[in-house]
Length: 252
Length: 267
Image 1 (spheres, one colour):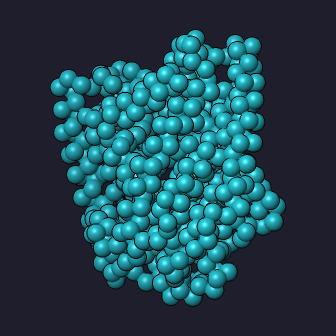
Image 2 (cartoon, rainbow over the protein chains, first blue to last red; image 1 turned 45 degrees about the vertical axis):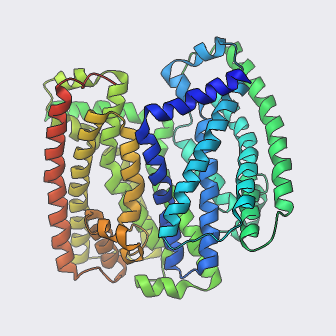
């Protein structure tokens, strides 16, 4: 456990070293997604629908941060040329990614706080039972982390995603119902959305918003997260072996 | 002129040699507009299209939202300059670049030109595709639309100059560009009329050239109601854009001088 916490501390120290980043995270995420809230206002959405859009946007940001920090997070170490040093240290890749995931969850909680504050300014009050919603955020985060381990395996193989990363990030959000319910999508896309943990997290949060408690979505989220976690762990180990066999650990 | 063109070519090749970067100009406006389009689709299904038409003067919501995204993609292209400066700093080549006989403005124009070369073709294709959803403005309106794009770019350069200065002085360009780049589409109202913004942000909106640009472009394209009479709006756009340009250049010169007093080579 100690190496894990040391790595988490390292990630958090980075934040202290670049305070402008923290300032940015308090402002940028909310203002980035706010245009979609205002498009909903432009269409005359009532308070309940606005809350529903806002919930989807908050959860989509969880996915975005976890994707860039865990799914493709090792890209940064590869680019800086410290990846091999990390590999020969007595810390496993899952521990490195676990530390990134933990610090990303903390960062996400900070960002969510900022977003909720900004949304209040836009007239979105989010009357949601917060302890339960926090539970969905954490549960959703865990499910998404499992999903991101698979992506991390791909990063080990292909090194950089470039613009494909943006496409994956938005596509996963759209399929999961970040701005509008996934059931509005054409049938094949709706089926695809059933394989994304974020979709269940958004549906669970929207159900909570409408007064229902933890439903079957939460259970599905847990199950899917576990399944992806196991699949990701296996794929990661395979990709690590592949990378070492091909001798591409130092390449970027 | 030749060194600038050479530098532009080098920057273009450096960006374009990566296949995923070649996709970026096409994917960027689509990714920006798609979440908004889904909200609009939801609104249409719920029967609230009238509310949209009442505020915008059109029912072609797809064209309305896509025009906003394309306009933003066009304007934002020069904001890659501070990121290029940041990249050169990280790679340790900035001092070498600054020491070449190429002028500062030459370097900046080279970087911006390289990005424009990648964005312009997709912008043209996107605008042509918009014609499927809604007819093009013609005659005088087309000329005015081009003028809007020109002045928007002038204002955008001003902001980019200031951002380059800030990057040279404070190094962390990603955060600076991120704050500005993420808040500008909202404050400039690229997807909606700015009177939908909460009042504290509306104050900022009126200081931004893009607010007048996006609004005027929609008026010319869809006949949407404008913030001010169109002639006054043109004057405001030109005045704010030129002010941004002059101020941005002054900020750049000042901060660049400061950075040369010791910290230019550090990162």
